Amino acid sequence: MKPISHHFVSLDFEQIWDLAPVSLWLEDYSGLKRLFDHWREQGVIDLAGFLAEDASRQDQCIEQFKVLRVNRFTLDLFEASNLEELQSRINDVLRDDIRNCVTYELCELWAGRMGFETQTFNYTLSGRRLDVRIRARILQGHEAHWDRVLLTLEDVTQEEESRKLLEEQQRYAQSLFELSPVSLWVEDFSTIKILLDEVRACGIDDFATFVQVHPEFVGRCMQEIRVIDVNRHTLQIFDATSKPKLIEQLDLVFRDEMQDTFKLQLIDLWHGKLFQQREVVNHTLTGHLLHIHMQFHIMPGHEADWSRVLVSLVDISARKKAEAYLEYLGKHDVLTKLRNRAYFTEEVNRLSRKGPWPVSVLAVDLNGLKQINDEAGHAAGDAMLRRAGEVLSKAVDAPACVCRIGGDEFVALLPGGDTRDAQAVQDRIAELLELNNQFYPGHALSLAVGAATCQAGEALDQAIQSADQAMYRAKTAHYQQQAMERRRS
Image (cartoon, rainbow, N blue to C red; front, side):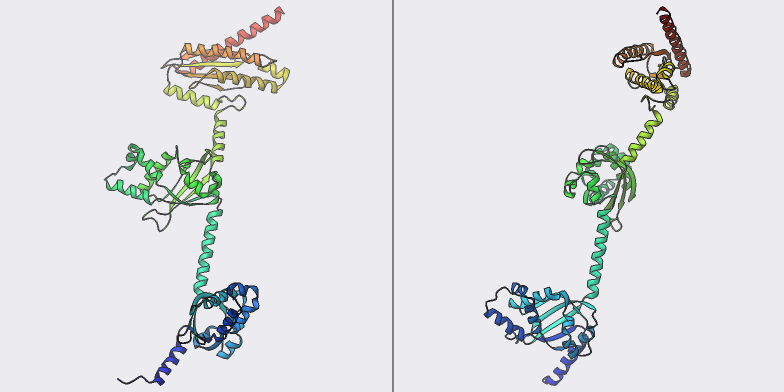
């Protein structure tokens, strides 16, 4: 076998060096070695601290880096025409806040390591920033003097820009999540999917009936909701001081009425509805009830295992209160707080169809309201109407109700009440009138009352007319009695 010619080995090395697709630097650190030895003789132990005391000491170290050779890839990368230009402008390559990285490299060598690996940045001669990954090694046989050091620089600018872009996108997404004015929850429903799959594997087809018969299954699924993250607004509306505090006390949030709505949610999931929205009821950690509009969405890419679910909650408690108030206004008289004429009409229609029979009716009229309005003003008249409302509301108990159907006209409906029940209510009204007049000074409150009872098969409207006629007779008798008393006086 012929020996390999050193001439050809040298030629091969030259070609490999010059054509290598990576930046190669051959440097001489012997001056740095001598400087380190000098500092050790002076008693320096902590190089990092020593360099931090005086910035010029790091400059001294950098001046000891002697570039002996670079390859063509390096010249192209740093936009240099030749080695001499690169050497003469090395301070343009190593500038700005690169000092922290250089300190790390120097400390690695100070500690006796024969090389280092780090990621930093340099600049091309035109000023373009390069993110680079550096690997350096003191060559074998040169460990004593550090006069031959091989460095490779890998341009990772694009990789670093991609990483920074990804980090920025992640920060952006996290900011959208955290600062959203809507309560956002990221949850894991994977165990719930497993439970549903197990039920399906048992041959269950009618899941709605299954959860109706087995409510404990719904409770088990609720316990398997895994909350991964919530945003800041969630903490605010649920009165939680921190995310861990909320997650630890989910049993205070998901309870009571929530089981019924969660059952509907499970039925939808059973039928493949991965996006849902409905109104639900939750509770804050301090016990306040929240009316919530919920949107539930299994996130894209997680349809197979339901391991990521996004739930958005909008607090509609204020809207619900407004709706309840509007509903109240629609069926109540604002002045007396009794039911109004609209409710009276609906209730008469309902009782006429369904009973229960018998139904007794009390027609009630406030005596002397016109005189009070004329003599003391409408404010005084309104006060008398409010007093009438107080008396009548306390005189009947549910399911009976009292309605204000006109200016000074009231009707009490007593479902299932016979003539004795009607008389008992009349007696109760008389007792409460006496107490009311003792409590309020000034004009005495006086009510004219007439009663009638409607049996099954009879017209309720006729009973209302009969009670109204009886009330007018009582009212006439009242005014006649007043006239007689005035004549006597």
